[in-house]
Length: 564
Image 1 (cartoon, rainbow, N blue to C red):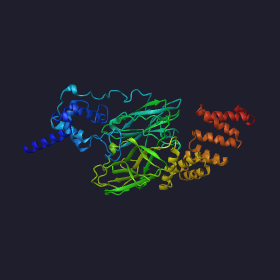
Image 2: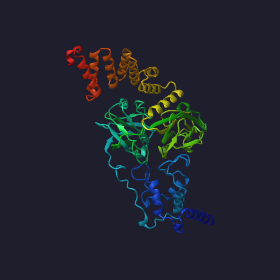
Image 3: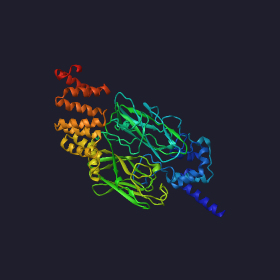
Image 4: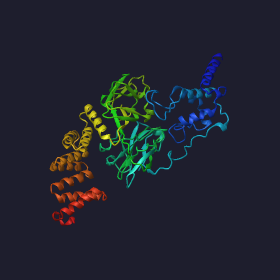
């Protein structure tokens, strides 16, 4: 009895130290606790969301009072991985020492309700959309049947917006359909229709974790389009809206976890448009060292690293660290040209269940020639409670949840006005090729950038390397043909365009380029036929319509009668 009394007095005194003087003699009631719970806990703990129970009422919280106190005291809840003092992030979920002490004192005092009139109203999660009615709602073409048990599943849903004009997107809200079985989701913009080629039937979707979307390197990703349980949709600041053009499609890459019973998963998207076009051009920069991930069984501290030198002044706007179950200590910082160190993020106890995109409260300025460092440590021992293998086994990089990854994504905005992404993107690709000289995608992307810089000879060198490494990739053949055409080697260019069409007969860009090269060699009838095939698929293609009209007008005497 004496021991219990001494502990009780200690807790009450500790709590009293953190109250304002006006409340020093008062006992905390639910009116003191509710604002904390509503802000930090309720986003996940409300009906229909991912958490297993609700914390919206006094009765809800009182029933779980001891559990809430223990989880907050230990730091397990609310989930917030970055260590304080190693990056200043907006919308931190971390509780202050004062908030933790108030909860502990309230629970220790029997969790009194107090005057009901002093309790603020709970947040309203009854509305279907957090940001209000969207300008456009898209629903997946079909459901995915998640089995009751088994390994994690990665499934991709394709959403065709069906737009007839360019729109600028200021926010997107992802509704996962079954939030309790969705670990996280990423949305990608597919401008080339490459994802649909992986579907066995329209609307069915397709499996795969490390999704690769074919895109021009001059139009890279610049915005994090990410969902996790309990998150609030990110609204882009003025100037940061991203575009959707007619024909573009959205691909939702979802990480699903079986729950013990079969689930039908059918997500939907809400898009919010703005009339303000993009004037700020950030780039998503990835540091990684997956090729070094070969972790022997039993090793407690296995490290990988990557370092990237910025070619220009830039602001870091957000960071997204990523690893799997063996990740332990994740660090990222920058060494400035004067030798000083600036922390970007430090996570001392990684848990992939709570990964997130972290936006800085204020942009982190890094001058030109700053070096960004990524250092990740992994624990493949039996002492790691999150290790999925018992006993531990050798683990390498891969796309399964039981494989490993080491990625650091940064949203970086070049500091000077205008679109400076190409300069940053080229430096990033060359950095990639220094580490992985046989990466066909890196060679292809560098070739595309060199084409845009009007350096076709250097572009052809890179694109030939890409074609040698991945000979059946139609995008490589198409770009190689463009480079050869710029060098006035139209016969060689035609051969490359034909290889692209052999791999993908519906590749409209390659067919248009083929027609252009044929016309330059005087093969007008063949050029006209290929342009007609482009227009048969897309009758409103302005380039094909104009080019066909020019050919018919300028070469009417050379065309067969059936082309008039």
